[in-house]
Length: 366
Image 1 (cartoon, rainbow, N blue to C red):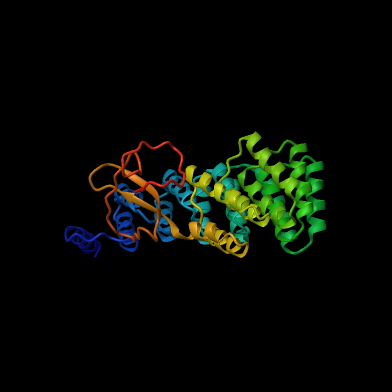
Image 2: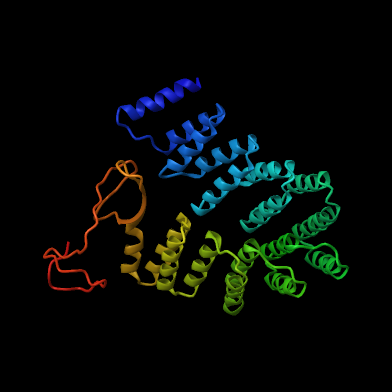
């Protein structure tokens, strides 16, 4: 059956058809299943418009093969493209790392889950504790057990008991690390106890526990809801000073907060910065851009955002991959379309050299 699928795919290409993402997802899954991992990853890299399923297929197959470096590489690409694993995918990744006793990576996966708003389940805690037990990391088992108890108390709404237990653990020099703080802060923010979360976040500095990207990504939305500009800016400065990476989640939160302050042009500039860093805004972010701006009377800006689409293209003649923002009202483009691109030294039809600045002039432009 697999050979027939590969044959049909090659026939499609030979007749001049361009396989879409759905077809490429199928062929990639088949290649993984017959053991042609390199070929499958090549299909993934060459897919111009990957979707969530594209990355999910790759990660699930790589986990089954215990290809941990492959899982890490694909996960990074997935996050940069603005897609996030779901609970089931996270469970598979976590189980894969714990079985191979890659405990540092397991803790990072847990932190990412929490920052994306996916609360750890009993199964998650069980996998982690089992992995640390088999590795003989007894101190870390104590830390995970304490963290799991705090997480359970917060989920049960017993915030005061959770905070008291956490403070007692810190005072007793219990092995509390950034993951423990992140779990506790996540529960407090989700429960609307942002001020208590701020207290724990400040306490991290006192005990010399450095927050990571996930911890900051949890704090920022809570401060956004409170409208606490001062603390919000303070955390961003701390991230920069400590060299903490700002990812898609961070930027989306910042853009949302800037919108809340009605600073729409600044939000647009942030999106340009995201693009330059290779971070892809998701559809929800573009929707956020359009609605509040239109309501505020910024119609021209709204039209600018809604009519521009980003395309990703692969050259047929050269080894070149390109991302390009196109005004789709002037030049409509659909998935699978082919186009020719040329670079011009000037937009002036009379050949006048470009000055590097655009001004509304009387002569005709291209």
